[in-house]
Image 1: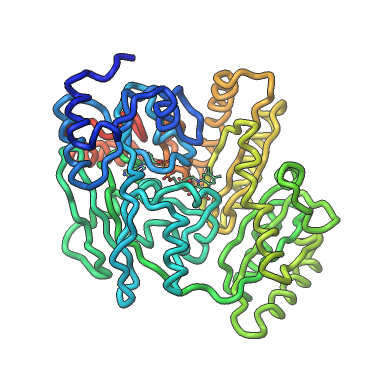
Image 2: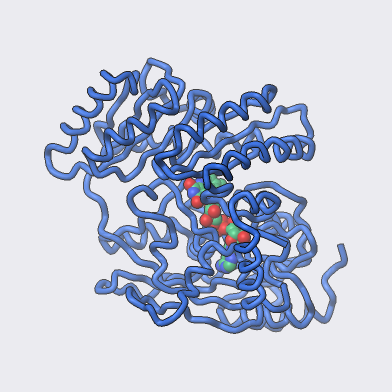
Length: 465
Ligand SMILES: Cc1cc2nc3c(=O)[nH]c(=O)nc-3n(C[C@H](O)[C@H](O)[C@H](O)COP(=O)(O)OP(=O)(O)OC[C@H]3O[C@@H](n4cnc5c(N)ncnc54)[C@H](O)[C@@H]3O)c2cc1C
């Protein structure tokens, strides 16, 4: 890879200060990769601007020099969207990390793109409110990254995805213009809502530099139930039984091999003695005195129907937190096996049939690989993780998983589902985009991309070519 041109280096130094242009090998490795571990990080440099105006100047310079830019948040992405493997300029938003202008009437707050998700959650709690989008990586991911991936997580069934909490955002386009989109309005039908094009665009339309985020009323007391379930089909019967009885804020699932690994590697207790092929984790608000009673009646009903084998309900906040860890620690636990991740979805009512077909294909095509299932099943979203055998080289493993993915994606297509429910497309899923999007849709997306980024410098090679 060619080193950064000296004149470009001097121009970057002038914009952000020499200490904020990193070219040492450690920084290049760190900022050029994300959690997917796809590709070898090889950026030309990492730039850390401190204002939206500096971002504009860097983008304009990159445009003049035809240098590709990779916007970089917390790099917890799982599809290679923030990977810089082709001599790009990594534009890291870490320094745009201020939370300002809390407005108790609008219940909004203005965040720099580099604000960490947990920082916003804590800030909301200090003002007796909550930011309800949550997932296992919220201690490292950034609001700009959450917006760019439209992150979902564990509370989507009740609170929706990141998109639902973005009241406005500022974007530096690929031509260096600053757009102020929607400005916090609740009602704004004056033309196309460009804000929603940027949400989930994975840095291909520009750099998000700031967002006005909505906050919510915090939930009351929450109870957590973990239930052992005999087969995947029964999980959806359990969902139907509980969702009419109590206000669910989460409905997750994981398989026995997932539980075994989490218990072994995180030093956690099994929820109960009886092993079950699958587990459902439900969280609900204890609204009124009878919510728990209603939940217990549903539990008895599920036991009678044979949909549930055993279960436990949290008796304290501490117990609820340790039950949550059984689900939340799965991704981190599995990372030692460099899993190949599929992030699939279909409409909730079709999940049992969909999963039965996917499971049959996977068992037939991956006989020698260990498969781990978990996910946000209440949203119709399952994570299918294939673990890499130690002896198999990474590239060969990824290639073989890619081949089998096609069989899985054909099922996804037949069900009208998504090949990427919440992790985005990035590099890892771009060859499969056509299973979820028509040719016409992809052609329109190309035109939209060109309108925002006429020079083609914003995260090229990601989502589609
Ligand atoms: C343990 C673990 C659990 C996870 N659980 C979930 C989950 O439950 N639900 C879920 O949805 N995701 C989950 N993820 C994935 C990931 O955390 C989310 O996609 C998150 O939103 C990424 O944010 P980030 O700041 O790390 O973005 P990055 O990884 O840095 O970037 C992601 C994409 O956004 C672009 N980008 C980043 N910042 C900007 C910006 N300011 N402007 C323009 N483009 C930008 C990048 O170029 C890239 O394409 C999980 C990840 C891990 C490691």
